[in-house]
Image (cartoon, rainbow, N blue to C red; front, side, top):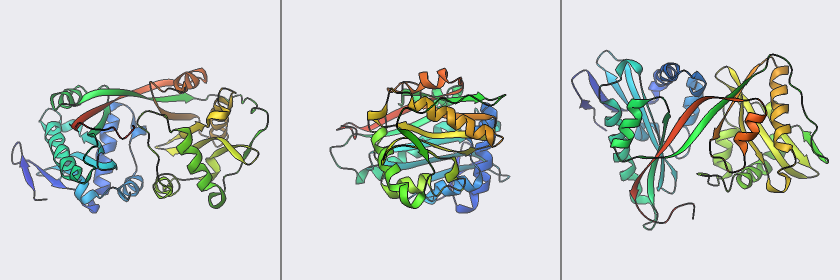
Length: 326
């Protein structure tokens, strides 16, 4: 893509190069810091890992707006999440460059890229772009809504501070924790996660390759942080924990249907808190769909967690048709 001048000669839009990874990570951190929640940022190593995802090519699917002095003013990415019919987008505008029409310009480029890719989708599928933003960002909200996006969901970033060692409940009868063995258990955990989240809004089954890249190949992956609850030879539930931007993070907590409503979710959560506390980490966070159908938000609040940030998810329909969820 050729450089494209925007607004004035001081700002230009171009495709990302691999050499941009540190500058983009710094930009994202600055945006999250201005929003009051740096937990949602990423290290350069984490960002580079994300850029290596099978369905994403940073040189064709992401863009920066750069000032004449070389500073990055904004970053946007859009990638085929499923079937060239469901596209995920993220846009970050540096606080020093707010109010200059950058957000609408990047939404337009995201739209253009998605329309290029949707030609590969099955002709009967509904095609849409999904984009999330910090709930406090009024400029982003107005830009989304002016461009035809509609709010479809709210997500919370929740947190707990642990001034002392948390109490831990007993696991339900017959349930025990066993150390995670990557070679022996990865395929089983992948299947259990796909099953546990099959009815969650916006969820779709991942391949073992996609799941492994997203979970096991992360730079910060630590198998000793994963809690796997077993009932005999069957996985009943799991809490896939890690460190994220200086705090403990409950990445994915799930309980399979036959084992729900027996206290297993709370036990996994509380044991996760205790594990982080024993390692010297006294702040633990997670992200959750505010309208979660399994009652996860109530579980987290009951465990003592509180809302730190709210994010709005917007959809823009590019073509009507059969939903991928149907």
